[in-house]
Length: 508
Ligand code: TNX
Image 1 (cartoon, rainbow, N blue to C red):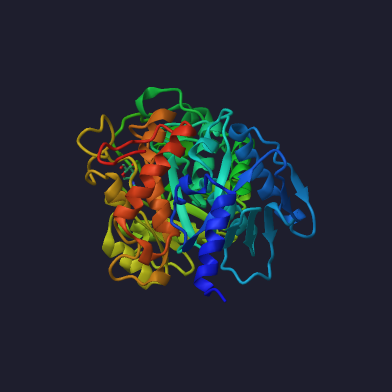
Image 2: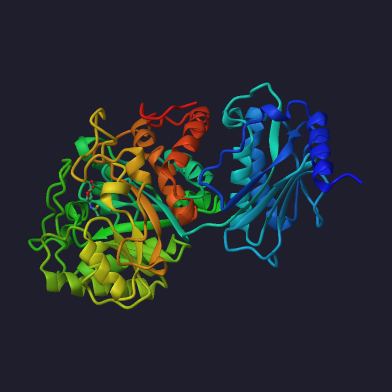
């Protein structure tokens, strides 16, 4: 009787014979790194007969996968809704009883097909994002590519490290159109990022329609850094962004930044000013952080009106109230005001998030502090029971220049090259893993005025933040991440993402 080892060897070479090209399929390269990935022998080829089979609950996810793959592959990839998975082709199995972590999935590719299994729709969606990365980079092209579409035999098991994997876009300093934001949402989702924090208001602009205070967009919607036209989202536009994100398992987190950074509000609404006269708009690049008149007779009613409308447009559980750089507001007034903001959040059924300056303010958990600058404030917040989102400027600020060769961007927190964006631990010294809700890269846009610059500053640093948020701590390894990113660059390129191709990396 032959030894089991010999049988395995023979089987392995037989399957290699069935698929003579198997050897030249490169090993799978997945970002963010999955929990486990076991390579097999052979491959599965998608062809004109390949269908996606799923239950009704998985249909939306299957549709998005088929939509993503059709342009480059030119394959029909019909979605078939059935109660039982198929024996071949691509099966998406949503099984609430499966023993899998929230947002987790397994993905198994054999020579006859692929099966993705998850206990929730997010996990199923993330399984499809991984599946996309098993295909050749050309599959990400926006135009048809005539070639074979093989995926390697592989078994993957995966789940995220942190629940919060975010990106912030400052649409206040410069406005970005709905379509531009939706394109970024597609990119976030591909990297398993699941929170889109929109910084909707600042000194230089107000970007969301508030029916009770139309002046906000009439005036503040038409200004931006540099004196350009600005722009704003109607409530319909905003709802469209929220829905688009939701379908891709991204929760939108709106930020209305008070009590500082309020110049656009004060220049729009006369009644918010002590002398009853609207101040001048501000379109400079520097942070002026004009303060709200916190004990003005209309101010809190105004803030309540704004949050009632924004919260009503927010299916997610969080609202971000800002709270940063309130340089013009006395400490005691600041604390009273932030406590009032928490009451408003409570009334709207939402959990408050604020920048780390809220740390010293006594607030009731649950709430969230976003660490960007001050470690002491962050530790105070954590000691008071807040959860922490890690966005340290020196690592997570996407408006910092990459290096001395960058043509634009800030430097106050230093240069943030790809390695700096990647090589840190979101669990800051002094915090426990459970204190940390997750990671968020933040793109301030004083110097980012078009989509090309948005792409360039955000990518690939957000890939690094995605891996920090998703992948296990013990998988953290810069050389390994760098090697995978060198392959991943070709995918971004096919999608038309104008990312920063650092000369320090050896791009494929
Ligand atoms: C600090 S971070 C700010 C922003 C600026 C940014 C520029 C934070 C909470 N406030 O207002 O845009 O620096 O890097």
